[in-house]
Image 1 (tube, helix red, strand yellow):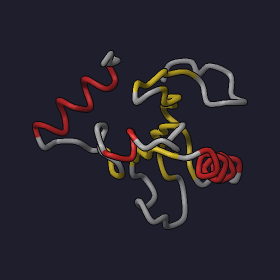
Image 2 (cartoon, rainbow, N blue to C red):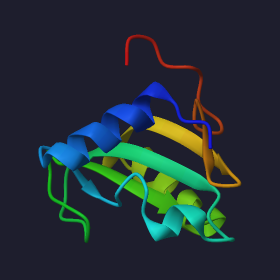
Image 3 (spheres, one colour):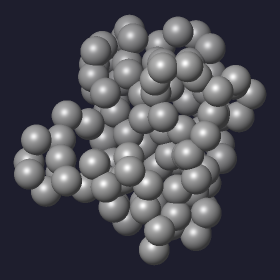
Image 4 (spheres, one colour):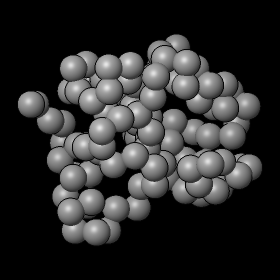
Length: 106
């Protein structure tokens, strides 16, 4: 399986027990589920969410519908997407989230 630098760093942080990312582990079972299409890393901007509170950095592996719900939360300024990847046969293809220009500097 091919891995990106982001994935290797996440695995190293999780192994060392210093991972600051809440939510799904980079190698969790959800990543390999048939209906998982997207991975988001995001910061919670305001409001309480099931996966964290304002200021938390989170990662979730999502179905298409769950991804659309997260994009709506971004539109409402509840979260800010930091990293996006399309899940393809459990490999991650990083890039801008659908409908977003490539980010500069982050």
